[in-house]
Image (cartoon, rainbow, N blue to C red; front, side, top):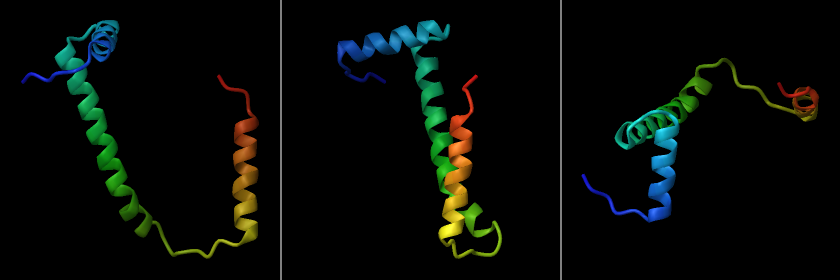
Length: 79
């Protein structure tokens, strides 16, 4: 298969493939597999939610706790 692409993009693809010690074909196959896995995961999320238990009615305290937990997680130093 032959795909016309801009030379700047071709250079980026070749550089990244080389950095990972891959052929351009193998690098593009890896990208496409990762993209497909991402789509598969997104497709499964709604079903997981439906099977996760009884529904809840989140109120103000629910969202306050979510914000508190997120703030705590974001305030930790990155490693």
